[in-house]
Length: 100
Figure 1 (cartoon, rainbow, N blue to C red):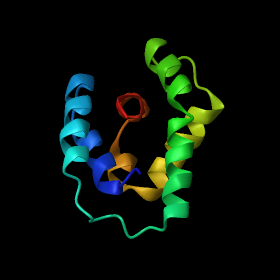
Figure 2 (cartoon, rainbow, N blue to C red):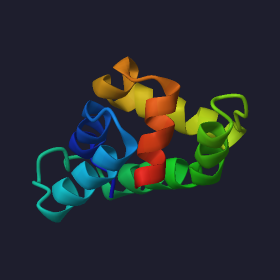
Figure 3 (cartoon, rainbow, N blue to C red):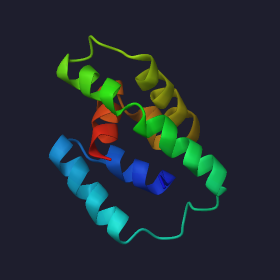
């Protein structure tokens, strides 16, 4: 389950290895904060973001030249639900998606 606090933590990191490490540390001891969303909506969040992994990989590998529809949907989804995501670049969000 993706929680807003995890996404914010991922976005606060500036490099891909730090993002992955931060996610692992945060997910191991994740608090119940941010889990007030229903399981249906968080499952939908997981699905939208996780389905964008291939597009995110293409985006990162092409230095932003390849933008798939699933990545676009995930970026929009993340920015609608998280203020930290609104401040992050598309590349930072794509790297965070890959670190999940």
